[in-house]
Amino acid sequence: MSSKPILYEMDITPGSRAVKMVARVIGLNLDIVAIDLFAGEHLTEAFIKMNPQHTVPTLNDNGNIIWESSVICTYLIDKYAKNDELYPKDLYERAKCNQRLHFSDGILYQRLRNCSMCIYAGGTEVPDKDIKNIQDAYELMETFLATDSYLVGDRLTVADLCAIGLIGSTHELYAPVTANKYPKLLNWFDRMKSLPFYDEMEAPFVIKYKNVVESIRAKNSNK
Ligand SMILES: N[C@@H](CCC(=O)N[C@@H](CS)C(=O)NCC(=O)O)C(=O)O
Image (tube, rainbow, N blue to C red):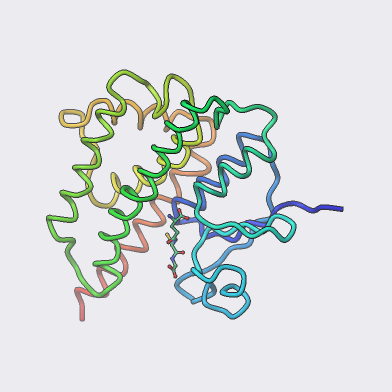
């Protein structure tokens, strides 16, 4: 008999929350196992055996191990969703979703990470170039959202769910999404904030992440 998929995650990481939001939307129950990266719980022999890249989120679906949040999300939708609304089966629509997902993984996530790494590595300020890289990504998103209200077309897809936590974090921690410079991105962000699960599943963890980074920054400045 198969059991619930197990999600190894940390709530302050945007990718972990993306997987949980997808599960919520498709009505899938996950067994959640919290991993504390700051305590090195991802570096145990057992975790590395499961995921040699030792990243969260990581999924164990009855022995099938998957990591990379966007890959986990699309797998869960393909396997468990009752319809293809979140991840269209139409090949062109799916390609557009995949492009946005790669943008989130390769551009948004990496640029957020670069900023946080400056602080984790002992710094107190994030270099202007790293902030500028995030703003450049916002400008690209303005073009993605030029005619559409969601990242792919006019309804919510997995592409939106994988981008919310990243934009929420860069906005709160490093580069505000301002109305004068990024009006379409801000409209999209407001639309995401009105999702029924946003206040429960997203907002508190963006603030928690900010507090973690700020407390490390404060310790660094007292050294
Ligand atoms: N693009 C990946 C990023 C995964 C990732 O690097 N997660 C970080 C936390 S945000 C992590 O687990 N870092 C621990 C490590 O690399 O050892 C995803 O969305 O799953």
